[in-house]
Length: 208
Ligand code: AP5
Ligand code: ZN
Image 1 (cartoon, rainbow, N blue to C red):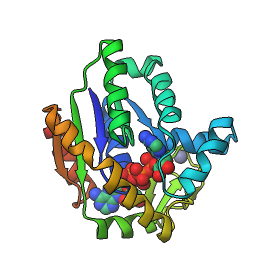
Image 2 (cartoon, protein in one colour):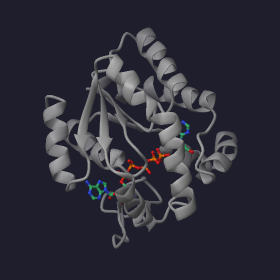
Image 3 (cartoon, protein in one colour):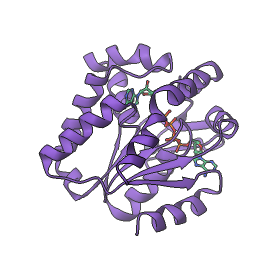
Image 4 (cartoon, protein in one colour):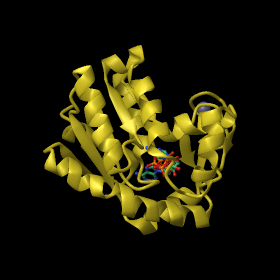
């Protein structure tokens, strides 16, 4: 299974990816998680990325493309991967196609988790994220069910930044729906239902 997850911030990409990874053992490649780890480690990449992330803007393409290429070459990605949060614009999608072609790997599907903006704003405002492993859950969960780490509110899950992330999505990422539609691999799931109902449809759409 080699798939790309598309959808607005807070649509539930990470939530569905967590379930697919637990059930099918594929690699979860989340550029948001990779970038937040770089920020936490205060690496050169992290220092460069932080300002863009706090502003709800995309980190420059080349930084993210290099990060994904490196991650795709790791052993666990050979068993299959879920790209979560990448690509996020047409240039990134074209770079991904080139990289996968060079690796001799096909994308099986681009799965759009479709959710209206009003739902997104309330989900993101109440989201908590694990400091150690990136697991996400609604507010009220204080200890990570996966690793026992502390749950916190992401800096970019504040109302002003959420609005900017939604704008960035509409202007730069939404055109990818058409891009993958044109490649004949787009599948759409209604993400505004309970997590397990969405997941059941995801599995059907992916033929799992
Ligand atoms: P990133 O971390 O990718 O953030 P995002 O796309 O904004 O996505 P989220 O993680 O916010 O949402 P999600 O869809 O995974 O939702 P989740 O499952 O957590 O990116 C952050 C930043 O990094 C970007 O702004 C950018 O600066 C930078 N960046 C990342 N990738 C980049 C790239 N490729 N290029 C350039 N820059 C990049 O769910 C949200 C909440 O809702 C949770 O609390 C969850 O429990 C709950 N929930 C989920 N599903 C349901 C459901 N069905 N019903 C009810 N609640 C639900
Ligand atoms: Zn954790």
